[in-house]
Length: 102
Picture 1: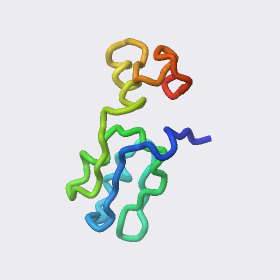
Picture 2 (picture 1 turned 60 degrees about the vertical axis):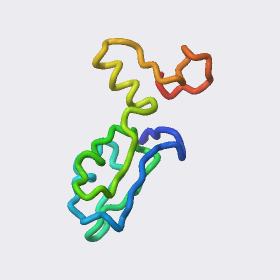
Picture 3 (picture 1 turned 30 degrees about the vertical axis):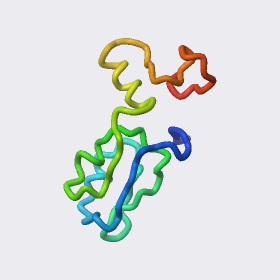
Picture 4 (picture 1 turned 180 degrees about the horizontal axis):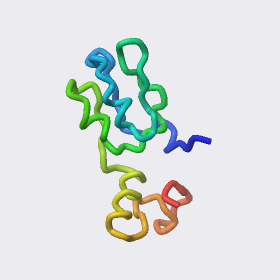
């Protein structure tokens, strides 16, 4: 089973017209959000994006834009560095019912 982030909330934007087909987004994405379709990349699973920013940082042609450091993915990654529990504003610590950081 492939886990999803949250449906239709990711900040990822992809402009296929700016894509040159280098394939770096396919190589660096840890969640297989992109795949090659002929000579261009295609965003095949946008909702799987964890907003890490690797695709945008490795796209030399500005075809990809994402706000890294937002949401649960950032909270989980930063908690690993800090050795603390993830805090992203949607865990049980905030009193909300969302469970994306558990």
